[in-house]
Amino acid sequence: MNAAELAAELLRLAEVLKARPPDPAHWVHEGTPADFLKALARLAETDEAAFWRGLDSGALWAGAGSVANQALAANPGLPEPVWAAQQAQLREGLAAIARALQARARETGRPAHPDLDFWRSIFEASRP
Image (cartoon, rainbow, N blue to C red; front, side, top):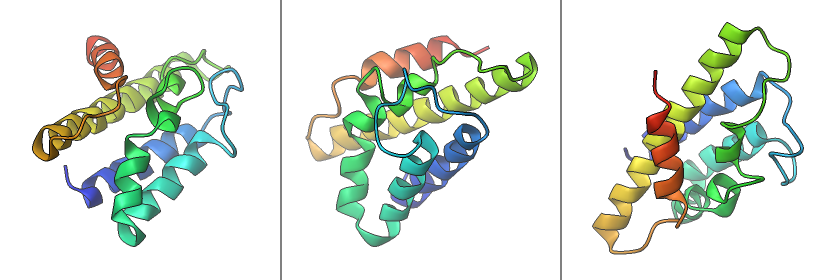
């Protein structure tokens, strides 16, 4: 995936996250996870280096308080089929982003975020 494709995926995931309240136990950054993803997607057009740094950041991948951790949040009261569909979209999208970041790391010879393997394995194992 190139930067434009990744930005489109971030915007899609932002819409999923916007449809539900952020769980304070799963998000410790300013704004909401959807706000973070939208701001990151905008960087793809204005500052690609910052975009790639943001994609590989702790706010996206560093366990508790990250966007990735939103995929483990408890259902805030949405109908179960809606919640399950949202969680599947979130996990599939984040797994695709993780794969793209790992491929970029191999291409550039730079290490990817250390938690990518962990999250990718969780998201891919949870596929229906």
